Length: 581
Image 1: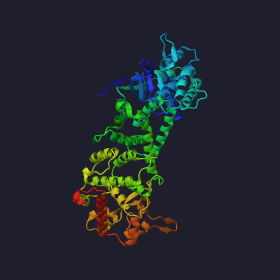
Image 2: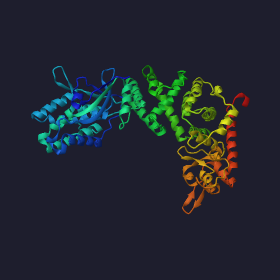
Image 3: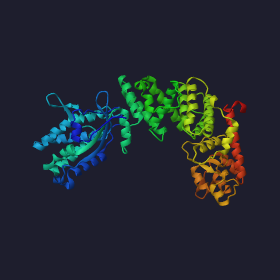
Image 4: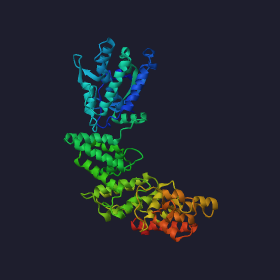
């Protein structure tokens, strides 16, 4: 169990502690507070210090809680701030603004406050003189171009000709302090005194960075937790800084962040975390690792002191991978053939995300210098992983069971071998039986996966836009069955033979109609208000043009067609046992 040091402290107690040496580390995000947050802080502190605008109503035993500060002591014995960066930075600016004004005041209380603030901001030399160059807080934030202004403001007490957030917030506090002094001249020293003595924080010192990050994630319900990618950024920054290339790195990182934010939308973690995860599987495969126990992302990369990030090619590789997925997302017809884009569209409806890791490993291993792939080989690869993942989702449900064959396939890829899944072939009779008895409810991701695949078995099916919103259409509506009960077997309503992709804009209108009424929505029509576009799902248009009704017989016939066609797909990709080939 991690050891913690937890002891509530006043602002004065925290900053005047002789051991206090705070570091805003390079992996933190840039300072983000603006005037809104500073205004809230100032007004809260003012109301606390002067209840009902009356200095004498203050209770010396009252405390104002400013929040937790989560840190850990790094190898240089500095307290790296994991949580509380914004609060500590802003408090330092506020105290420096008070110090400026107190420096011009000669009364005993003001001079006492000035000395107290000195002890919070700077360290004293051997003779007790406070060194304004020796601050109790430092910032190494890699992507904060304004951090030097923060240090300069604390050192010199001036934000003239500065435009950073630090400068704007410092000037805001200076303005508030002037107004405060004008309105309460005889009580001026009381406010900084009450901030120092009665405003408290909860410093939590963890024994390691990992422990501090876990604590932050548990405590914080307002701030944005540090991601793994933030930590990775810091490691890259150190590497490129040593090479004298920090500015080039920062520009490249910003581009990488922009691409990832446009392309990846993970349920958990950040877009950059998702990109690093996809790249991790390539590096993992190169290491010959096919263990089904996957390490956490940061645990994987931090091995050997982040050795992977100290290779010249790593960041370039990650950028190449990011641009590949950007072009997949944009359905770039200059990079990919229409046939490849059709296959990639289908894979976007996969029952799980494992295909993205497989494709990432394949791309990294096989791309040419210009990032291109051999179209025929890539198409064959996409077919076999589609056929395998779709089948495995029925015969061995759950993404965990998929890891064993997929991780082995990744090793084959980096070793220059074809992906065949020869150790995990399917028995045709068993597959047919499972398929026939499977309930393809709309809630199961595998349902949409199969009907997306089916839609593109029609040669005339044009590529669909990844941004289009498709629902699962019951061709024979559920509402019709509830009213008429005309299906002999009520389970037929959930057969794949009764389901299709359909644009959400159409499905909203057509969902409960009889087939004869639905036909015009499938094929499109014109009203006095304008044209109602047909569906882009070619098969639905063909069914509407060919049939007058869609009954149980059509459901079962179509269901058998889907099954037979998929079994043929397995056979074409050599995924059936030899007796079934």
